[in-house]
Length: 418
Image (cartoon, rainbow, N blue to C red; front, side):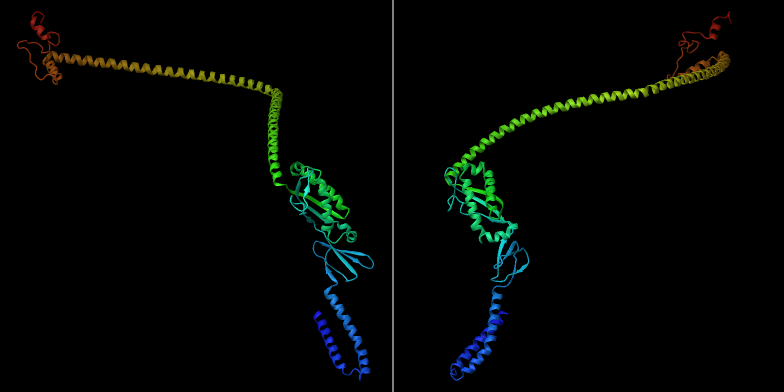
């Protein structure tokens, strides 16, 4: 569109130049004709110029404007003074009629660099008059409920024209009330809270919402910083000793409390054990009310069982005695029969032995040499040769028999008996 307008303007300019160069020669002769031609060309020329100017204004100042993210746009009518607020999307802006201001809706951070260093352009002063620097961060935002009012009230550079003077006025006044040691260590949180409270009230009058104040490092002169470090080290050692003593006292109290608690636990346990024993005794007493009849019945039952067992044992003993007597009688009869049989056998054996001995006596009487033969057979494994004295005429074993003379020899020596 802009290129077309530029092309149209260039063609019109060339036409004017050509017409001017040709018309100079015939100005006098063709004045009425030029006047008529000018009247015919002038209205389109004015229309084209107006269109060109409007197009250029639209291109350089577009009527549609978008609202950036995190910002709010406030459109003010220059003639009526009315305002309209836009927070997203796009809106119509007519140059010369509308004035638009953008306000941040997100939190903004401000860090004053002039007071950050002790050797900076505008250091802070403590109550002792010592220069120091303070690293501080201020988080702020514009009150979104008062945008129409703030559009007419606040300057264009809010941070430079509103935040910075307010921060410097509050910080210098608060820091000048405290010592370096309080600022550096002991009352840093209290100072930050006081700064935040005073600065919030000061900025709220201008439509600025303070979100928070954070105090970072404190910059001190090198010599004072070394002395402060030594002082802080001594203070920390003293605090550590104090805390150590407090911990020791608390440990002693803890031991006492544990002993008391142990005592209470043991007393409670003893009471509970006593109560348990009492309850157990009562329960045993209640149980004995039911157990005693049962025990009595058990005793009666055992007595009856003992009587029955005794009667059974008596009967068994009587039966065993009868059986034993029967067995003894039977055994005695059997032994008597065995004795009779043995006596009969002995009598018969004696009779047989007597008859045999009589037979053997008769045989020996008839044949005396059988004795010597029997003697020789018995002694054959001991004595190989038996020598009898000559002319003894007696028994060869008479010497062994104690000088007994055989019946025949005795009869021969006693003719009268024979």
